[in-house]
Image (cartoon, helix red, strand yellow):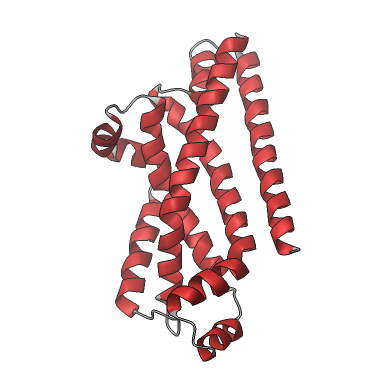
Length: 213
């Protein structure tokens, strides 16, 4: 039994790590574009901001279990299957990107405009302002947003267990729902709580380190 629990734990960590990584790579530029296209910002563009915002809101409004089913063709195309651990990374990433993009947008919007104006007055280009002013100033908030995204992914990965692909969610369903083994369910719940606490603690620590430097 220990080996099964360990295998499920590793599968959950794999799903959370890779989907979190891909969500960060996709959500960071999207969040930057959302923030900079707002009224009065460096790349003000009303229609671009409206269009991106509408797409992100639509994506965030879809329950994960429905999203996972809706993107099965895309999952099969990218992963070659829809029921393996690597396949679940596709819907998990698609669910996490819009959430993380919003947190990046919020973090960037909290950067004092005076800093941007000062950089512009010194002749900095938009790209220099993004990399040398906005991102460093907003990094603490971005780390906080990434931490929230990873915590959400732990919950999503458990729901993904309904399709029988793997992870702690599948273990809990197999033993709790089909075999009425409440002990295994309690063990998986405790492991997930510890995992969430660990991710939150690491995120808070990194956030404090960045905030104090």
